[in-house]
Length: 210
Figure (cartoon, rainbow, N blue to C red):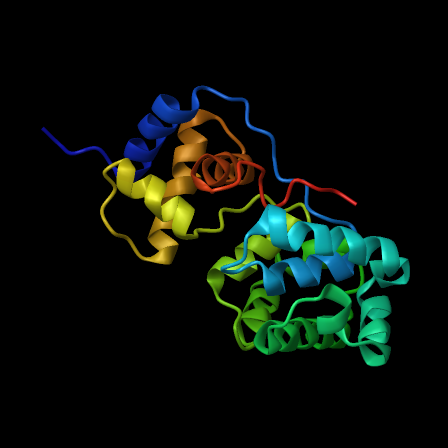
């Protein structure tokens, strides 16, 4: 008997653990300062208890940072680490570098970024930023309304529970995308549901829109 494909294993496990859905897609942000800080600071951070309150405060206190250019102007005049009360020089530097790249690429709004990430050259330029890997690129896409699968430790743990062998990032992302197609779900919504089922806090990473 032929062994089931990784996508079929994932699809069967989704049905067993999460049911038939439907699953809500991630909301993301329209405030570009929040978008950039979200993708820059979320790794190895408790999202709901630590990062989300800071992002909400940033959106309220820096309304002019709703565009990338507005956020860049704020960064020139204010200390981001102090504003967010988040002491991580590497993550602060990543936020500055992503901002500078997007300004140079004339990406200013949520819609601009969503379109830019659909171009291979845009994704490649983002990957060239220190600290930005394939997961960050896919995660950033979900923050601005693209339906993508960002494979992190929670999605890997779910796949391991499903009996999926240890796969590289791209093959595992493809398996999740195929599983979503088999189940008739939006890929980003399926990813969001799987993440929420595995994370220590049930609320999703990108459930806020604004």
